Length: 284
Length: 218
Image 1: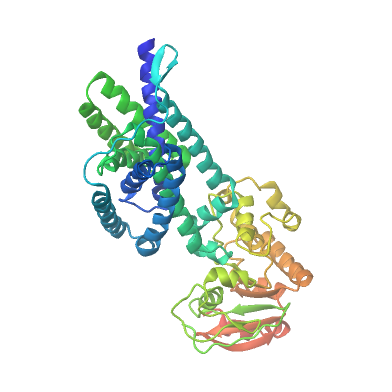
Image 2: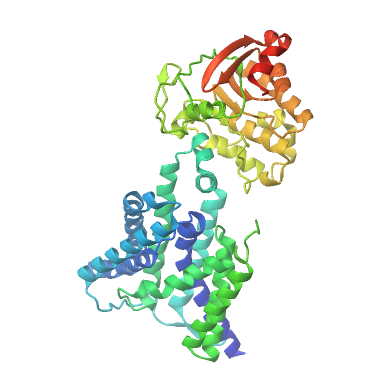
């Protein structure tokens, strides 16, 4: 029983953490169709915002405010100078954003050095859940993931701004002819995606090793989640992260992390082969 | 594709632009709506130059556009499509006015259905209403009768005439369907190789069958 609860909590925790990291990608890759190779660095810079805030003597919580602002600003700049020129050019967008990724990572190394920084957990100590002792901060992460997913859903599916953003992506010329300023919405959508990635980085910083490579580990499972779940919908991202996180945790609990990687990749390939539009995608 | 074309339309008038395929009808409408960048010349609207301005600004100046093929947002509901017609307009509130459903009652029945699931005629009505809720002064209608059943074509004709009268709306109607044009407009322009080659009152088009034959059928 305790083992089952423990696996269940681990799965839920990893799934929600992955969902948190995937949210920004759902916006930029799933909704805008831009393959952003620098997404891992957005996450990374979000985490370094915590280091920066703590060095400046501010409490951890201020970083949760700082990181989305920094990343939204950075996102606006990258959209304007790079991404804007490669919309709807898949190969070019991979190359261009990969360049951005390298530049950002090196900048972080120049500013903070190549070694890992550690961030103290702002909510130390465990809590007991159904007989299992679990770190309190992980529960906090789960809560943030659920809240942010809800907020993102409301923003894109229940507001005029979200409707306009989806309209621009569905049919740019028509949206423009209805008076929608398509450039403004590109900027806003990309900035929101970047801000979400940054916030995820800040929230995850206390449970990870904050180093220049930390973005990579989550980038691949996050992309896989969007692909497996189906692009363009938040429900798809939910299904995708559940599938990826669930199989990862269960396999690595019974065997090893390496086996888990192999199994998850194989499963992802099979799913994408069978459902090219993802688990929730409509067949066109 | 357009060659020194010039035309004037009076406020509140419905004018048809007719011609064979490839003569420049759609090109002209796209140029007015701001979708052609590689074009020189001048298009003035209420005395202001609009050529070279982005499409969203042109829309906000009061030009509504119903493109060929309708281009509704297939994954959005009918209501969301109508909402798209108002959220980009600076001077309008972000909600669909009630009269939209009075004009086309079908839209009320289908308001929560995906636009992609509507019939061609229903999509056309939706596309026209999506432009009308934006309260344009000039409506560009590109082949609204294409591939649509005759009863709905008649309803569209009646509605366009009525709204043009009520709201003092100017309509530029691009069409190949002569019957629809005869029913809807009072003045007709014929385009050939990017130029307006003939202009005729609708009675002349109706009685001089040689006219329509020359510019429409091969």
